[in-house]
Amino acid sequence: MATTTTTSQPALSFPRPIFAALSPHPFLQAHLTSTPKQPLRANGRTAHEFRSLGVNTGSLTHCNGSAVIRMGNTAVVCGVRAEILSSETGGQEISGQEDEKEDEGDEDDDTGEIESLKLLVPNIELATGSSPQHLPGQAPSAFAQTLVTRLRSLLLSSRIVRLEDLRILYTPPSNPDESHSDEEQRREVKGHWTLYIDTMFLSLDGNAFDAAWLAILAALRDTLLPHAFWDEELETILCSDDPADAHKLRLRGLPVPSTYAVFEGKSEDEEDGGVDWVLSDPDAFEESVCRETVCVVVDRSEGGMEGRLRRIEKCGGGVVDRGVMKTLVERSTQRSGVWEKVLSGS
Amino acid sequence: MGPQAVLSHLHRADGSATYAQNGYSIIGSVNGPIEVLRRDELPEEATIEVNIRPAIGVGSPKERHLETLIHNTLRSIILTRSIPRTLLQITLQVRSLPEEDASTGVSTSLTLLPHLLNTALLSLLSASIPLSTIVTSVLLAIPANTSTPVCSPDPKELLRAKPIRSIHVFAFSGDRRLLLNESDGTFSYDEWEEACELAEDVCCKEEGGVGLGEGMEVDGPQDNMESWLRDVVKRKVEQEQRWRTAD
Image 1: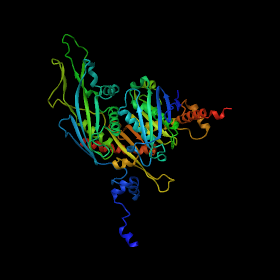
Image 2: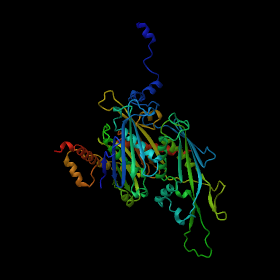
Image 3: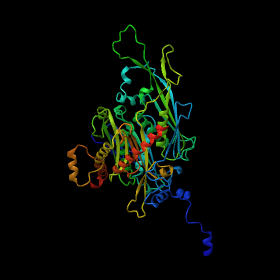
């Protein structure tokens, strides 16, 4: 009998993918604790390591601006399409000095007008077969709706697109009889450009927010708006087809998000809680085991090397306190340097 | 003026609460533990479902975002493993918003979030759902001209302090852990830390004896959320138990 059991007994250890599927939490814990000096995650990265980025812009010909980006196995396409929204009220008048006061001027009503006219319209498509959780042909999931709300609110609150770039202005010919001693010239807003920012996930392997934002940033930097002008005789807005007249968007700052997931390690004896790891740039497997996520958005373009914070989002648990948050802000600031290089190199 | 709360006023729900502060008024109701759909069933823990109904119209992606935030926060305090394979249904109906809400120039979902969280917790308490700790939440705003944060500002104050440089929502558990944070605007880490410390003082009860608590009240008129919460529950329990004490 003893001989029969030894021959028919299955192996007591599982192959790697089966271990991961059966018990994901101990699987990741085993990875992180196996080498105490240099803890590696299941995907071979260290806890602080982000995935490398790949950006390719201008690949879609029918868009005003587009980008395909890759972040590990997450791949995203983003296209920016511009449409003209003509003002039906006959155009409001603005003073001529407005574009002289570059940065500090009308910051306040800038976002207000972009928001109320809905000049930035982001959309997310996850149901492209990008991951098994999002089946094609279904209504946008709660996850997709959350994602698009976060992207939209970051687009608006970071004030990355200038209202000035989206305005279509018209300078009425000055009356020759009138002796215009004042140099101030009245201009009218005849319409606005509306940017439809469509983002499609080709493949989703975690960290959807950072990937989508990188794609949107790269596409906006690539966006070229044709020169639009008010034609007096036709009383409509026309676009010039000369590429030399077209202008790029002058983006304000460079907000860089970094997402972290907190892996709560369980110790063998239940008394002390075990070690917690804060994993940078989690992939889909890690997101499924981690409950607490933190997203820090840093903008280094204004505040020198240490940068300014644009946004902090954290929910799902209580591991990250003020001390840990400080290190996360430092990690995010370092990470924003990588984004700057990748985006300017493209 | 502090927040107002009424507990267990809906008789058909397992637990309910109405919460009102600064012109925001929210009704919360909790049903659970009830039977869960096979599709949503989790073998080892309870499924939590959060529904937010806005004051006007039907839910939009903004409400889905708030639902996700509240779901993730409550999941970390509800002892879901003690009631596995059941459903907890939390419905939050916004009853009224202050008139100035849309014109303050800050994100309207952030100004609503702390009130939703506080309502959800009161409803959970009213439904006697097993919780590991409580959660209290507060809104802070840092105006552009000063760097001192304004604590739970009402919309009129926000309008007066316009432009607002950054706005923060913090939620703390009963054991002073930071459970949720949403910060938006432009700020430095030091400002965030200061806001976080202030929020902790407002949310959590002062550690130590009664003397410290009294000292704090002299410092500022702010009473803190946790003692307010205890007070609400204590009054409710006293009212329920009055048949015992009556002679």
